[in-house]
Image: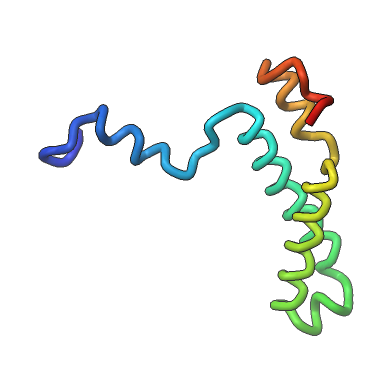
Length: 92
């Protein structure tokens, strides 16, 4: 059921706004989320994180972003390969 005046075809692009457009984008986004969760867990027991949670959150987010930009853990590449998203995964 759609609201009056909105056809399913017109609602589809709106529903997809902000969603990854390809397997590569989805895989990279998933790896980014995983890296963010991983770095957050790694820093939870540290003094810097417990002394200033806001600063700790920013630091872990920045570290996760940098790890992702530098190639990450290779999780995105494996996902792309497994999901058939491209032949040129290594050339990213």
